[in-house]
Structures are given as C-alpha cells and as structure tokens.
Image 1 (cartoon, rainbow, N blue to C red):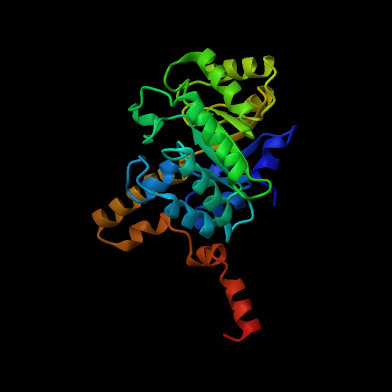
Image 2: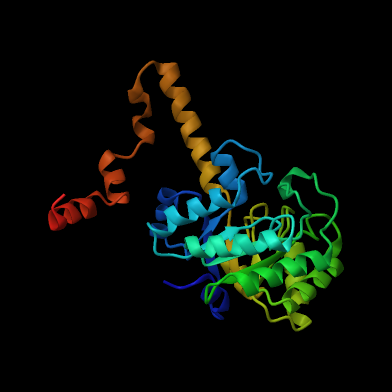
Length: 289
C-alpha cells in the first residue's frame, strides 16, 4: 500500500482520494480505483446528523479510522479541521490518528471553533503563526514514519485573493507541510488555476492539493497540466446516498409495498461479497470456531 506522502510525491500522476466515513463506503471507493480515502469532517458529521462544527471529537475520528483501516488497503487522510484550539490539541490528533491507522492529516487556517467553509460563518483567518505552530506540531510529533501533514488555506474561500493565499502557502510550506491545499468554492476552477500557476512560478515545490467540489467539471487532465498532485473528491458518497435512499423510502411508503424498493437495492449476495463473508467462512474452517 502506498502512503499519502508517496501519493503526493508522484510526479507523473494526479492521485485521487475519495470521501468515505465508514468501511463499506471506503471499500466501494477502493474497488472503483481511488488511491486513498478522505475521512472528512463534513461527512463524519453528516452521517451522524450533526452540522460540521467540531461536534465530534478525536475519539470519534480515531474509531472511524481504525475500522476503515482494518478493511481496506488504501491510505486514509484525516480532515483535522483547524487542528484543535491549540498546537497541544494538534499533537494528540496527530498521534491518535496515526496510531489508529491513518497516513496523514489536513490542518486548515479557519480559527477555532471550526465551522464548515460552505456555511459562510467565518470571516477571518487564523493567525499565520498559530497555524504554523500547529503544522510544525503535527509534523514533529505524529510518531509515525511516512505520516503526511497537509496544510490548507481558506484565503480564497474568504475572498482575500491570491496574494494572501501565496503568503500563507509560503509560511506553511516553510513550516514543513508535505502538501499544500488551496481551497475554493467558486463554480469554475479559474482562480485555482491562476493560483497554481503563480505557486509554481514562484518556485514552491511542496505538492499542491485541491478539493474540486464546486468546480467539479475540472478534469484530471487539467489538474495534471496545472501541476496538481492530489485531488480530494469529497462528500459525494453521503450526498448520493441521500438522493437514492430518500427516493426509495418515499416510493416504498407511497406504494404500500417493500417491493417498490427492489430497483434500488443490490442483491444480498453483493453485500456478502463486500463484507467478506467467504473469508469469514474460511477462517472458521481453519480455526475451528
């Protein structure tokens, strides 16, 4: 299995990691050919019907990492939000996530307490020095060889422009992050492409990461041409689940028969395959119980 750091360092390839917050969704992502798993705050909270607002804690994320890492053979990158209130919290996150089986974490410069970027509630960036301290803490204290730390700026999300985003990029890469994530919620990739051009023109060599949720028409070919190393395809699994299951449930209730859901449901044998029932039977035969 490649690590997140190894994926970032591949020069001739754009690595794609998929949002998944449980082992079954992660296995579907692995089967589809994704290079890794993004354990996102958005999805973790959504599956538990919470807003993305740091309601779940380190233990919740570590438990999810542990369960996913045991059942797939692709690396996990954890959305660590703002890294907690202080670098002391960041250290515990790095140690617990790495110990649970993750191969990296992403820290953003939203001030604590974190609120999802798409809510439009945060109007300021965390102080550069505070985020730099958290990045350094995660890099130096994670206790796992090959563990990646990705730094993310919300500068473009908050409309502060490419100059501010570049200032943050330089500070965070100098702090030792293994990847730099430029976040954006525009409908087109234009601003991200402009940033990427300047990023490379100014000689920054730390691998560049994007999350093309709102500008999802961007192709892997365009990413490669722009010098993007890794793209996170976030939150589609939970959104797709809601679309399909909500429609199916409504049809079942409206029709008065469970059979109205047949066209939406896979055979039970498909689930048996995904959860490795044959492996369980083989183990029982080998070990006697």
